[in-house]
Each structure stands twice: as C-alpha cells, then as structure tokens.
View (tube, rainbow, N blue to C red):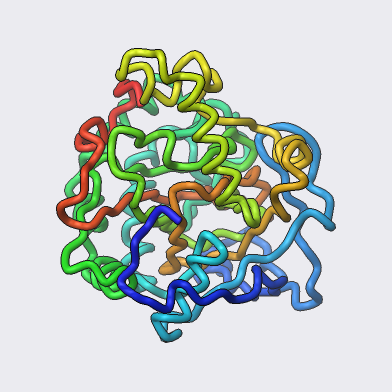
Length: 354
C-alpha cells in the first residue's frame, strides 16, 4: 500500500467506499460578501457534475462521494480505511482560522495582479470574473512569468513554511502512522486554481519521487472551503493496484535508460507534461475493468486528505458557483530514517525541472 503503519489491524478488510452526501458550510466571509450568492447545501444525494481539464463531464454513474472521517474516529478504523480505500479524509485536523490566515496571506501577494475580485477580502479569494483565467494560472497550468516570480516567493515564504509545521497536523501524522518522528520533503507545493483555468492532470504520486522509498504519505490540504465542483481533488476508486501496475510497466520500459532519465517523470516513456491524461472520462473508460468511480468531496478549511503513493487522482475543473479560487498544498511525509528523493529536498521553484 506504499506506507507501513504501526498497527496489526491494518490487515483487517472493510467494505469499499460508500456513497456519502456531505454538507458544506461555505465560509462566513464569502457568504456575507456583497454580490456573492449563498451556496445551497444539497441534502438529496445528488452527485456533482465533474470534469477534468479536458473532455466531457463524468457520468453520474461513474461519480461518487468520498467518505469523510471525523477526527475522533478510532485510529484503527482510520488505518483500515486508508489501507482498503487508498485514502482517508480526516475532518478538522488544522484549526479553521489558521487555514484562512494562510489563505489571506497567500492571496494578499496577488492583490495587485487583477486576479482577485475587488472590494472583497483576499481571505475569501474570489476570482475577478472580468479577468482572463489563463493569465492567472498556478502550478498544474502554465503560469506567466510574473506569476512564476510570485509563486517562487510564496513557496519560500516563512509564513508558509511555518504553516507546514503546524503542530496539529504533525501530531496527527505521528499518531496515525505510529512513527516516532516524521520527515517532510522540502518540495511542498501551493496550488491555486482559478475558475476556468487549467490545473492538475491525472497521476499517482510515486512516479514523481522515484529516487526515494515508496513508503510515504501524501497530505492534501485545502486552504479554504472547496466545494466538489471547485477544483479540489477527485480520486479514482480502487486505483491503488492500477497505479502499482502502471509504475511497473513504466519502469520496465525505462530499465535500459541511465538513472537520471529512468527516475524522471518526464522521460521518453512518460507523458510530455508528466500527467497520464487530462481527460477523466477517457482514462476511466480505458481502465474500466480495474477501477471504480471518480470520488470527490465538499472539503472544508481544516480538513486533510491523506493518500498513498499509488492512488490515482486529479483536480476537478474549477466551476465554483461562488467564484472561489481553489488554493491547496500537497505535502509528502516519510518516517525518519527513510530514503528520501534528494531532488525533492529543495524548496519548489518554477524552473526546478520536477
């Protein structure tokens, strides 16, 4: 499963992911902002209309709700869910106000770019609908030069580095994994995704970190509320085995290459931009016999989704009804003493080639 947890209960099997209707409470700041409509909570079980960067909307029969896990759930149950489903979505790991402080800090640096709606706080991060979203793309899209400079600065910013070390997050990771000490790779990433812009394509994490151990834990941290159609992550149900199989195929094809090329996510046997596809419908259909539905959630500030290195996932197209810019950070944790990919032990920059 890509992560050795300190619990014998990990071997116990539970049922696969269940459909779940989760109610989102949009931020009070956004709901009270002038000109911003309220988000109607859907309690009928209606599935969201999802699509990725390219292609058609995913059919309702191929879509499902992720299962949220309250933070007071017994650890053994959390570990079972992670083992059997490839992910576990933990509610309210980080204090909500801490997350929104980080959101405000990040977007304050973009206030002069025209990306944000005027007369609304950067804390809300509402997109300026009169602006071209392709001019304000973040990681996963094709940022313009001026945005790249801001992104480089944001990743080295002491406020962000402090956020990554928040004690509530770190304590949870040690409790969940049973590790005495965790180690985060320095190359954590901040990804903003404006409504209508391009974002993260379909992938699994391991092929980006091939020069280290494959037993690591990814934490995806939404920095602000993020509705199911707001550009957050969607996970391909039962895809851990598929990720392992695909990686075995990639490595076999590349076994004759020099190491530098063999571990490269952009080598000649990989996709040009490092992603396996940008079309969720097409990719799911190609692997229909091996995987299930695309699963998604209504994420709240303070939630964290943990997934294994092989779980296939992508960002949804941001079609948020409130015009919110999706901001999130993805982090990778190892147990102290594990072999780390040295390429990832440097702070992200737009030209680092990874």
